[in-house]
Image 1 (tube, rainbow, N blue to C red):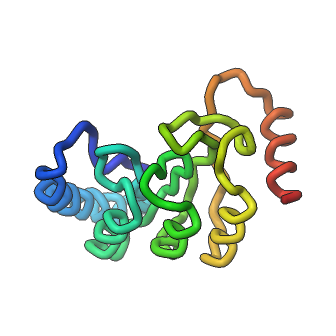
Image 2 (image 1 turned 180 degrees about the horizontal axis):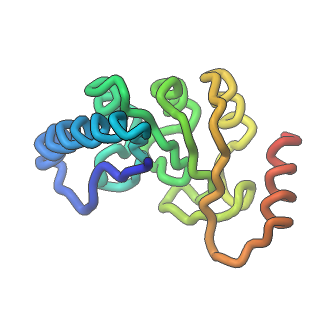
Length: 157
């Protein structure tokens, strides 16, 4: 199960209190998921949202041993992808894959934006990531052939 840890916008002075509330509630939800045979994955989300960098994600993961991460590579606006994976890689069990311009989320196909895909894939391999590469792209209407072609390009990097 994938969950966003917050909405937005939030003021900086609200972050710590909101993060503590999120940690408490994520623990409750994670326990419910575990009892029902599921894993709760917290998605990193951008801008003023909670979970916008590896430091906040690490605090959430360390609060409950059953929480894991859905790494949305399109949402990092404050940190390098490789550093994010180095910091929290052992908690990443699923992904949302797309590309962007480092200014705001775009959900473009991989290789259409600014992500260094070779470095990102290497970081995931070093973190022993074995989960899926789930495409989350816009605009809608891509065919399976489009996805397969793009995925093959990524594999050949």
